[in-house]
Length: 239
Ligand code: FPP
Image (cartoon, rainbow, N blue to C red; front, side):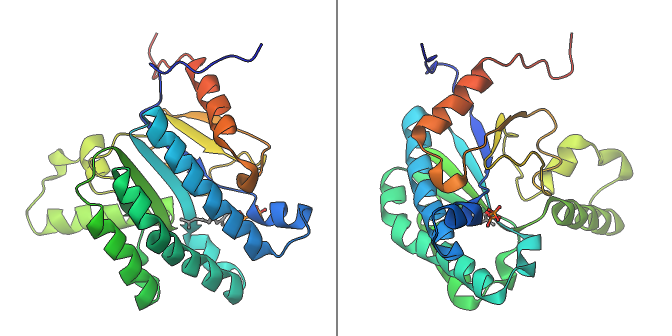
């Protein structure tokens, strides 16, 4: 018998490393960009399902600082896909009460994509049902380095004292400031590593790895991940 989901123990914050788009394309004899497009379609479905289940925050790793190292054509495709996602999804997401947020530095993106993404943030900024964090041009080491520089700057300017620096303060200098840490991290496609994703925020997060490639990841797979999470015993280092 398959175990069922406990609707009263839904993780408040789920983070996903959406991996395996290109392997999916290869397996299905399609161009790699088709894999990314399928990945975008799956993201739509998973956001919808998270809203339905009562997840409060979903953070997805869409474009890492390392992804600039891919072929120019693939990089352009991915960036255009972000724009397409924000343009085509804005209405249904807005209606569903989803607030879109970006983690990362999108200043390096072309003007048109940047403006499109910023517009979707602005339109959805007062929504309260589900926060969708899209990690774009995101790297955790870069995020921590940036935070450190800002902290030192504020110390030098006399706005902060050395004694003020603690874990809570550091978290306030990260892109995820004022957000609860993820309860559950899912990585698809069989890889078991963090790839420079939320190194500070994932300290006590439960990890779930699945062989399913991201473009094949359906609501049912999300349920399986949540059921696995519900069977974990979270101690946060205590007892
Ligand atoms: C990893 O698979 C995936 C990415 C680098 C891009 C993730 C992007 C999407 C899912 C597209 C939709 C997202 C938005 C926000 C529009 P991979 O390319 O590394 O595949 P591989 O591991 O099989 O090589």
